[in-house]
Length: 196
Image 1 (cartoon, rainbow, N blue to C red):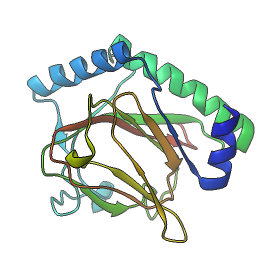
Image 2: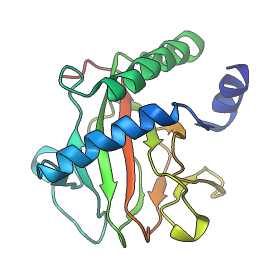
Image 3: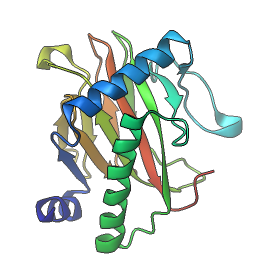
Image 4: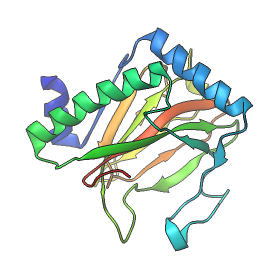
């Protein structure tokens, strides 16, 4: 945990390999497949409220919001671990995180999400972003890399490998490079207000 705290303080991001067990990831993938078969995923957009729009040139993913009370047991295993991480972040960095929200995410073959930040222009309740990857045996040539940019324009790349958790400050610019294979994850934000 100390390595995480030191790196996050210095760089504003961290990657946890094997954050969840393979069995838990398998259960979450099964839940995603069930929801997909029921056609409960929706095309993701950009902006919020009156500024919300679907822009295929900006992002190509499909999402389904997670409700902890109705989520699968395996998803709730991950959410429990995430709450422990929130406690550590607040204890060490006084971020004032009061809750988090997240959704299942699918990027179909050929899709991407161009460079952006997760903090909306007029409302900045998102403090820390996180992505839990659920892709078995991912190969570098399949793309779908999360690229996190730093102030000096250097960047770090995160493979979307099964069980990996990436967290980073929501103000950081980042993008998802084009994927040549369906890419699955749980994506979300730790917030400094209550999540309704």
